[in-house]
Image (tube, rainbow, N blue to C red; front, side, top):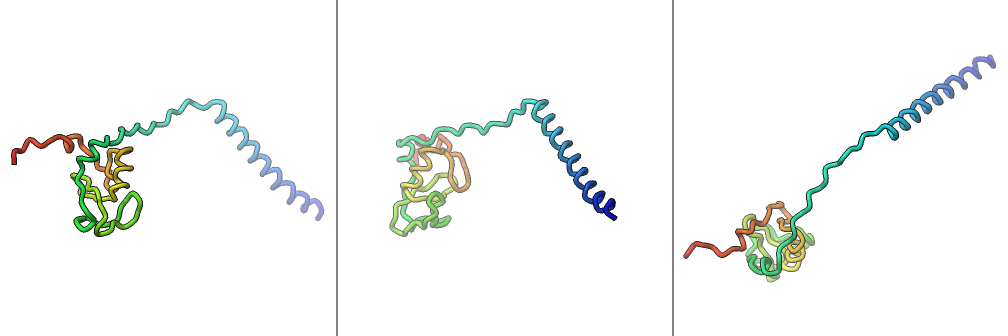
Amino acid sequence: MLDSVLLALFLPCLGMSAVFIVYMCLLWYATTHHTQLTLPAKPLSDKGLSPSDLEKLPKITGRELVLGTECAVCLDEIGIDQPARLVPGCNHGFHMECADAWLSKHPLCPVCRAKLDPLLFTPSQNPC
């Protein structure tokens, strides 16, 4: 009876030790024989818009917003009489300060990630 109790305790310990030794050997092998993996680097974003480009963007009030009155930068509602800036092309609106802070660092719309095309800032060739 005592022999079977000792055997019942010894065999699981022996099995766990064997698993641990195999794990340590695999870990050692992986760290010493690893190949140099190069992870894809995140592309550097373009510089944001200049202050002169920011001034060329349309300025409206919260009353004129069509696609919603929540500013995606600060997540606050744009008041009816608050000044807002409209991103041309996608027509998303933001608080003036929030849009200027975001767009001066990123040339993308914060909502749809549409890139602001430099053609939006050149004078139109249309005589009308």
